Structures are given as structure tokens and as C-alpha cells.
Length: 398
Image (cartoon, rainbow, N blue to C red; front, side, top):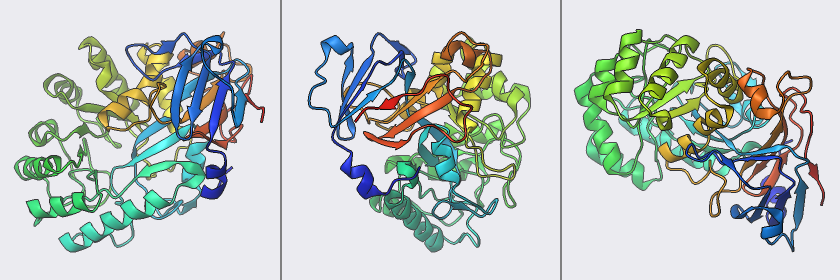
């Protein structure tokens, strides 16, 4: 259910979540916490621990987790929004609200490239980026936070353009390679200018995905040195295996595995990162909306895929879509810890799953059932309309 901002604000007081069965932190170094209670004030976490050790008095809202798991709100590191909660790519309404029902509380634009008539001149692309940044800062379907306004770099841009964008509040670039800049030397210069002014960059990796894009191979990715190697498993067409392993071995940047990519290449990336002892570089996205549609459950599907076929414990796979992404993207969500954003998903194993508990069911490849999503200390939705029904669901006590 989508709440307007006035309804959300009214509930943003002291929140207590108790009787948590397993508390997953989002921190790859310590993914499971010995705790059963979380206390929040407004949009921040104030305490995490055992109920007997924390102050739960004075709560405006209490949630009995009923033994379900609490995880940080999931982050989709790669989306392509356009206008409001509509995508012209599939002419579909309500796609962002659908992702909320898949546990996604934060989205990061990789460029508003599906905008009909997208301007490609420097003045126009800057204007569109600033507009998108402003619009999605103010518009939050169901409370989902969308970091948008991601300009695609084009020939003719100079350093002052990046300075101007940063001063206007733009913090991310769209995928390098989706515009006219397709050589590593020029791309590296523009990425460097962006980084100088606090703007993070992502590069398209693999074969072309939309008209005007082209093959971006490992040499251009390495020369450009963007902050995030976007859809390293292709969006949709992946690079050859040796090029993917070279990107893992020769770069230190984030390795983004997406739903709308090559699953085999995604597993190769995961396996290589694991062999290198660098699972902290793995982040997840959907790369949607796209030609293959929208995927409301795309992030939890990726978690289940990578855990079950990549032989990674489920609690670690969840970190790919939470703490890892938050760190790589410099966000204050993604971890369950005092001072962090109070955004959570309460979930349990799906009814009749063969797994003995939530984590075992995910590692067997089953999707979890979502019983509640909380964004910045306010309940955004209760039982998900999109996931399989959970064995247990939390209860909103008051």
C-alpha cells in the first residue's frame, strides 16, 4: 500500500521492533547479530540488542516480529526511471510500488535513458538530470527513496558542466557508453571530472542494450576506471569469460551483478570474487525497466540465485544488496546499526518451502515471503502482494 508523505510523517516517532527471530545486519563481516530488538527514533536506528538490555518504553509504534527475520531494506543499484511511477519502456504504471513489495526501499538510477526524446545536447542533458534529481527527491512511491538525475555523458561536456551539475545536487552519472562518448580516454577524463566534484560513475559493460549504445569491452572499462562496473554480467549480453575475470582481477571497483543479465556470467563473477577474497565488491541491481520488463522480485531473486548456485551463505548474499551497495554508493542505509537509516524488511521462509528456516530456504533457491517493509521508521506496506506467502508474518501492535 502506498502512503502519502503526511501519513508517513505522522507515524515517524519512536518505533520498537521486538521478538525478531534472526537479525541480519547487512555487514559482510558480521552478517548475523545476536539481537532480537531494534529501537528507532524518527528515521534513525537508536539501539540494537536483546530486549532485556535496551529501553523499549515510550514507543509510539510497536511491531511484534513473531520470530521472523529482520534485514536492512534492499537496495537496487541499477534502475532506469523516467517520470513518476510510470515506465515508457513497458508502458507500465506502478512499477516502483511493485518493487517495494519485493523489499526494495532504495533505488539508484543508472540514467533516465528511456525518456522519450531524451536530449543529448549539453544544455538539455544537464536540464533533464537536474529535473529528474528534483522530481524523484520529492516523489517517493510508498516511501521508496530514488536517487535519480543521472546524466549520460556526451561529447562537448567540459569540467565546468560537472561542477554545475554537482552544485545543483546531481550525485551520479548515467551509464558511461550509452551516449556518444565511447572511447576510454575521453570517458576517463569525464569520470575524473565527475569524481572531483563528488559525482559517482557507472560504466556500461558488455554488448549494446538500447539504440545508440555499443559494445563496451574490458579495455574500455579498465581505462575509464568508473566507480561501478555496471552489469558486469551483461545487460543483456555478457563479455567473454576471460574478460570478466580480468575485470575482477585488474580492477578494484564495484562489481555489479544484475537480474537482466547473463546468469552464468553473474555466477562466474561471484566465483571469481570469492576466489580473490573480494566478496565485498559484489553489489546487486535489476537493470530495469528494460526490454524484458520489470522485476518486482528481481533483487530477492538474485539473492536466492547467487546463494543457491553460487554456494554463498544466504546471510552473505543479502549483504550484496544491502551493506555492500550502501558502502559502494556512500548511502546511510543498508546496515542495521545505531545511527543508520531505519529501513527494514521483515521476512520468513515461504509456506511449504523445503528449507528448515529462512536462510536455509534461500540457500535452496526459494524466495522468501515478505511480511512488512519499513522505510525511515514508518511502515510502508505489510504483507507483500508479490512474494509467496510467508510462514509467519509480523504484527503491528499499536
